[in-house]
Amino acid sequence: MFAGFVAAEDTNTRFRQLLAAGQTGLSIAYDMPTLYGYDTDDPEAEGEFGTCGVAVSSLADMELLLSGLPLDRISTSMTINSPAAPIWAMYIVAAEKAGVPRDRLEGTTQNDILKEFVAQKEYLFPPAPSMRLVTDTIEFGTRELPRWNTVSISGYHIREAGSTAIQELAFTIADGMAYVEAALARGLRVDDFAPRLSFFFNSHSDFFEEIAKFRASRRIWHRLMSERYGAENERSTWMRFHTQTAGVSLTPQQPLNNLTRVALQALAAVLGGTQSLHTDSYDEALAVPTAEAALLALRQQQIIAEETGVDATVDPLGGSWFVEALTDETEAAVLRYLDEIDRRGGMVAAITEGYPQREIADAAYRYQREFDTGERRVVGINAYADDADRAPIPVLEVPPGSLERHLGRLEGTRRARDASAVESALRGLRDAASRPESSETNLMPHFIRCAAAYVTLGEQCRVLREVFGEYREPIAV
Image 1: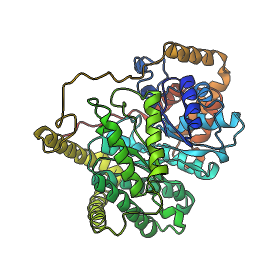
Image 2: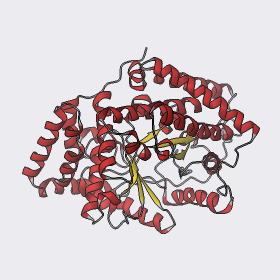
Image 3: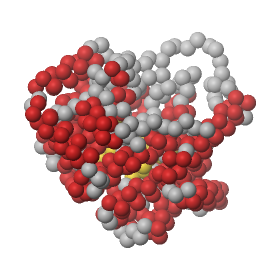
Image 4: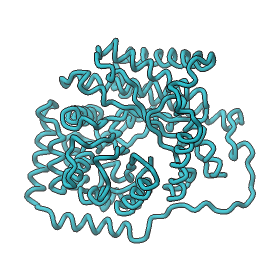
């Protein structure tokens, strides 16, 4: 898989190249203004274009991004959280305008707002309306997009923030429990939506610890869904997860060493039973990946899949005394965390009081102390470092004219659209958002109407900010 590039037209070109190289799924990472619900020409967005992904300000960008791609034959994963619902609506409308009905679309929206409060901090609205948006997407997807994973419950960012493997798994599963309970409170049956829940984990450098984490995840989720939530459909109990290698483990020093790190982390994910995989590019500690680096990352997956034989059996390390014992220890430690979160009133309550945030901060501090003292060794940094001059690694730069083309398209979109349709769509969104949460006030139809009218992301999120308010994290004490 490969994350988004810089501008919509450039990303579309890269996607076509990777599909031709044998890729079967696409992953779109959005740039920082998009992640925070701003249009690219907003003063808050200045200087951020192209820093970490593709900019999407309106349906016009999404149409260009997806132009000519076989949307009925690929799975698209989108790294988007607070504004996931309006961005997903743009994807749906763009696909339907290209002739692909929504019930044939396959993919995943990350859409995991709780881990934003815990770790990544790209939140917009307070927890309650944020959970409403996630529940709206689960309900809408259950009814109208049966092949879409509407939320990817993500431990990846929790681990990148400095958590341990056990904390990553415990807090991710607790987030998943909160989403299940919110959907049940909305009136959905567990077996109607649970089969489309998916998870997203980090694969770090402690090889056997990661394998044990993945194995324990399936045991715990199966028990929770069967015993706590009464799932009867076997698929509701499956822990279906995507894995990405550890971005935080990549080093700008001796960056070619990252190829080895990524390969071993990817192998651990495969041995642990991952269903899909993203391999980081070796140059990601320096910039958005170059085309060469992205292709090498794809080749690492293909070599593992085609040449090693590790996919020839399910759970190839099952029965190993060491792996089984480590899996048992991991499961027991995670369950202790889940019991503590239950004692605090569930994950939303625990987040509100800052419990998981404090646990992660303490773990990150311990890790840094171990690194600083040399107890934890990182090759090329505090072990086997050298000052030898090396050929510079080529890094990706924003292509000249990309920002100007994007801004020109945004200005042209605003001029060409039907102003009365824009006003009507935003009025409908504001009215529905202002009323109490229910199936009747599900906001997804309003986001789709806004997308079709070429209402920009920033305009939609401005309405939501006015209705819901903006979240400011309390100062930790």
